[in-house]
Image (cartoon, rainbow, N blue to C red; front, side, top):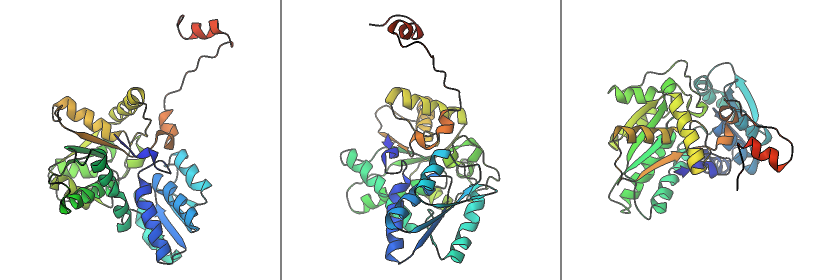
Length: 314
């Protein structure tokens, strides 16, 4: 597992955002802006605060996890909720930026991809100078998978490796325009008008980086998957209980993809498989608490505690 939840604001977005905000400062810009499902807003707000830049974020009203919204709010971002989806926010972010003289820091900004590609360098280093056989990555807007591909290609161009990994882009069934295009052999995506999934971070129907993502998957000889929400939740739960790694549902898509391919026999036991876990579970607490947590309340005695646990323990 490549656990990106350990980054400063709890998601992979920090890799690209520190580079993007640094460029904004170098250009003399005083205001930055993004459209976001949550993680981009939290990351941009943090780095903008550190750089003393004004930050504006556009989010789908009611469609952002409270943990992510709280981060952006306390980091000083000016948050505007839009009646619509993330895709609606993306449709207006560039024009809004022009009117505000703001620097756009969505993943359409190439500096974001330049920062995010460093994750590929880290994977290579952490595997002892080796490239994995497979790299599984959740796909929403598509920039992260494209960044990994760019990073691995650069390692090969530098002579550090002769191999490239096969990339697997994993989407939720209710928001899978990229996976659908690849699975159906199409050259163009068909945007999903009303994307629906418990995985809010990848609830995107018209991904801005779909061309780069499709090229990366096909160029690597990889695969695209679309998985039902119950499998994402199963992977999220299993990862927490067996590895002690708590991720948000979208982040668990990579692990769910590996589970699916392993069950189908596509992955072999001798192969190295890296699952990119893109964000911490505390980013989306509502999803984690979708089922009521039952807590036994007893008297503060050993006897009562052991009784609640179902008998004596030694």
